[in-house]
Image 1 (cartoon, rainbow, N blue to C red):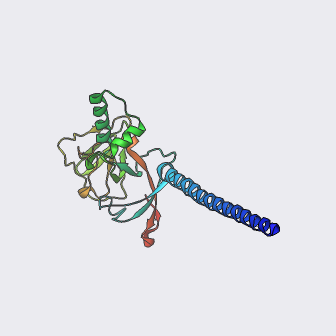
Image 2: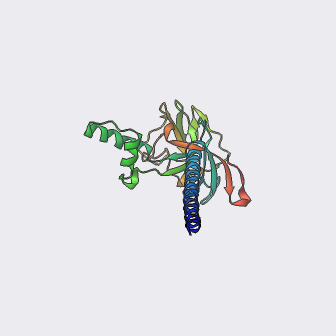
Image 3: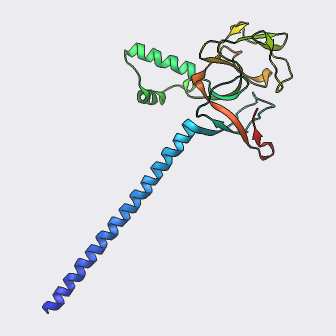
Length: 229
């Protein structure tokens, strides 16, 4: 009888050990999956923010070079602006930075990256990130002018094989010739009659810090895959 009792006790202990090991393995598996997902997300965000991104063209401002719903590969890491580059820029960058500066002055505080991120969630729509696709026309220090429907940079007619129409200045608040400030670029869309760009005081010259990256390739549609230029 005693032998049977000992056998039953051993079986119960063995079962408890197996259950404990099974429970431990399940939680270990869950943790490994969670850890793997977090690492994957961190890598994905890092790539998107700092290395390259895929963006969708919204609107006709770069027609015929780019059209609505084109998908572009945009490189970011180590990018330095050059005249003629097709870039992705944050159109609200300047206004948002001015808002942050005013907030710091009014509240006698200094915003760090985390406090800016929290404040960003409460910003009105016209201060949040909104990307434009444009082409760099003038670099810092360049003198941009529009004469008889042509674009001049530093006194020379700009060679624009991507556009054969007339370029007009349509905002009386932007005076020409226009000298591009240090740390800024002057941009235009290839669809000059239908582009909100540096010719408009609403956007104006664009801070280099507002540039997200350069468009390198078009991935979509399939019949137009290739380098963007």
